[in-house]
Amino acid sequence: MTVNGNDPTGKLSIIQRTGDLTDFVANPYSFGSNSLLAHANTLYYHIHGTPFVYPKYADAVILTSAAGVWATTGSLEEIIPENALNVSAFDLHWISVINISANLQGVIDIYKGLAGVEVKIGEIDIYRNAVQSQEGAKRIQIPQQAKNERISCKFSDNAAGSNTCAVKLNGHYYAG
Image (tube, rainbow, N blue to C red):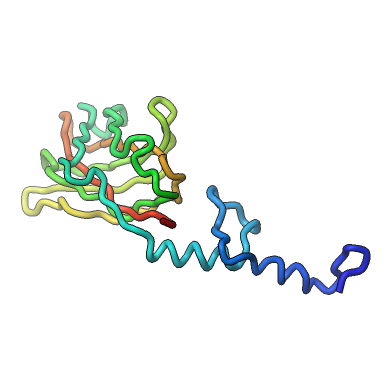
């Protein structure tokens, strides 16, 4: 029941907060501004969205660390170009690490944004030792990215020389 446009019982706001069948959680996320159906739809498409590998049907992208121990000045390499993932918003869940060039402990930082204005959105650790190479898929979690977002990575390690590894990214679209 409303009185002069007011809802003293709070029931109307609950109905409004249920939302429409076509609602999705806003990107970027804003607490309290999404309906219940937006959360339900986003959860459904998060689980069932189309997966992707990037680069697909191509060699992994080589990352090169700087020559100093834990130097963070290594090259920032584009993994997913701007406009390459143009279906819908997406996120990443795995990074495949291939061909670590030396025994080392390392960190791969993950960035979004155009060249020169990248923003860090995630990181993983990697390592390789003389007994067992630890190449393979590593779990990552990043915020949802808008479609067409550019993704790049930088590699740092604890070895004195410049080293390399190669990466591919695995993720999924949110709707589409």
